[in-house]
Length: 178
Image (cartoon, rainbow, N blue to C red; front, top):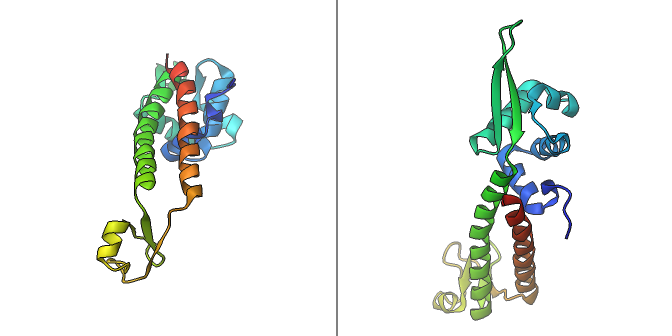
């Protein structure tokens, strides 16, 4: 599976959406194409956004160690110029860490769904294994609603698909991290 850009991976898009908002992916794509250090003003022009908006995103990335900068003083104006770079291995490292935790939870969910029958409340979405639901006589302890079985084989298949997708993307991210 050949990847042109780290931003093509769903887990990367999701991560940046959470970290910096929708514009972050566009900013990362522009920076990847430049393949060299860039200024916030350059990105601002390409994205047609205010420099302050770009700096806000870059500062969020800097906080996580994804973007680094060099500061230099403009001798004519006295203002500071910031030249930014992306740290792709750090991006991969953060996402790998987060996805491995998520993968553990998905595998636990898969095991639980294979071992137990679950009952869900249609009113409040409370979910209980058969043994506990039976103790409450299939009446939701949270809201009093009726609990019905929900051992849907499609849900188990979807969980397995998610696990495989994450594992595939983790392999790609591990290569980037190196």
